[in-house]
Amino acid sequence: MSTPFDVAIVGLGAMGSAAAYQLARRGQRVVGIDRFSPPHGMGSSHGHTRMIREAYYEDPIYVPLVQRAYALWAELERAAGGRTLMIQTGGLMIGSEQSALVTGTLRSAQEHGLPHEVLASTALHRQYPAFSPLDDMVGIRDPRAGILLPEQIISAHLSLAEHHGAQLRRDTVVHGWERTAEGLAIRAGNEVVIARQVVVAAGAWTSSLLGEGVVPLRLERQVIHWFDPLQAPEYFTPKRMPVSMWELPNGNLFYTKPDLGDGVKIGMHHGGLEMTIDSVDRRISETEDALIYDLLRRFVPFAKGHPLDRAVCIYTNTPDRHFVVDRHPEEPDILILSPCSGHGFKFASVLGEVAADLIITGTSSFDLSTFALSRFAS
Ligand SMILES: Cc1cc2nc3c(=O)[nH]c(=O)nc-3n(C[C@H](O)[C@H](O)[C@H](O)COP(=O)(O)OP(=O)(O)OC[C@H]3O[C@@H](n4cnc5c(N)ncnc54)[C@H](O)[C@@H]3O)c2cc1C
Image (cartoon, rainbow, N blue to C red; front, side, top):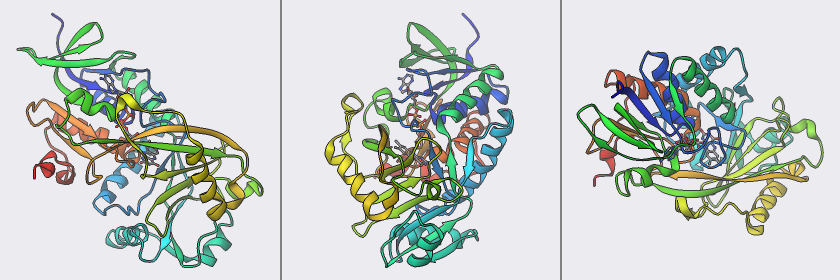
């Protein structure tokens, strides 16, 4: 029998590709396996762009992680031969002064001493004419926010992982594993791969692989739209239009991203239909179109020109929307990496590094208690 791999990574999307790179560059014998050929459009990491922001409204605990992520994204750009993988546009978090988006952003900015600026509605519109907020809305400007290019990042992580000796099995489904004397025997396509440890980074397929109940995950369908601006295209360039998140008076959230040549992007953040991985409906209804048209007309009116493209993507949510980075409760040689809940991509670089630390040394310099599975025990 051949020598076991040090680590097998199941799923080579955002998280698995980053983990493969970080483990391989540190000399681990890595095999990475994916049911498709990443980057692909079937999971959670497609659609040209992802937002990165530093003043993290969800919880200040994410700030040290995202700060390390920024450094690693810059490092990845250098390792990938100077390719642009991140574009700093600045960001605006827009809502009423009482909204969770605005109060949470301010809390993170203040707690971590981050640069930020509070703009009243009229000042915001004057400075960023693409946006027409309601009179009682304010915008918190996060100067370091910007855009990541997910498909290019996954490709870069995978080719660098291969450069450092990782073996990748594309279009190969992992069906399960058994414990053997040599390690975990993983059934991958027609092959059995032996590895001492396994990282499960299977995104929306995590529960179908681990079994329902190991991680309490629910899948949510999300729709993305791209538009050709109706007028004033200069307002929508990355230089003039920051990435933005909006909280509406009813608590719903949406986001926009500038035109990188593929159109202005807009989508709802949460509020999508719950589904299972076997029942993902990739058709987009007129009602879903109408909701987005209405948001654009009210808040980004010049963007509502010709619809260019639409896509369906999947959020894999935990009940508290924090990530899961923890060992399998019954199999300590399996590390579960499920950082989605609609906000995981920006952390892929640092969570790849965290996964490598956990696999190689058993510890991380970050406090990962918020991401422990034990929080769901009660
Ligand atoms: C519309 C949308 C917008 C988003 N916007 C942002 C944003 O602006 N900023 C941000 O930070 N985050 C954002 N996110 C969240 C972020 O994209 C996700 O958190 C992240 O992409 C999840 O990565 P992942 O590796 O967990 O999943 P994926 O990238 O989907 O990877 C999982 C991989 O596992 C493979 N796999 C599954 N099962 C098996 C198996 N049995 N055998 C082999 N391979 C398997 C799949 O093929 C897939 O490649 C957004 C998500 C969506 C859907």
